[in-house]
Image (spheres, rainbow, N blue to C red):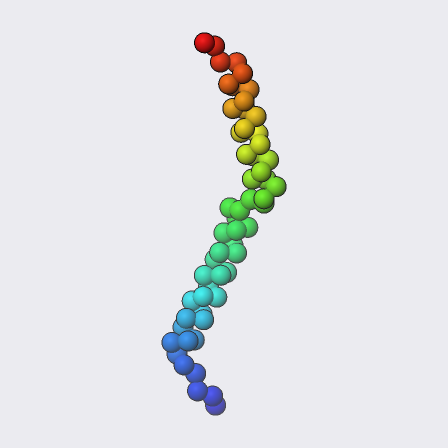
Length: 56
């Protein structure tokens, strides 16, 4: 039988649970870098188009 530090065990278990939750959320809500940059480029183009049609 080995001696186990319960505080270290609890912290390691909590960290593993948080990591699993983070991975799950990344899959559920995350976007790839390509998706983010494409969305940003489309927003920039829409803003330029809108600025080009502005009347004075």
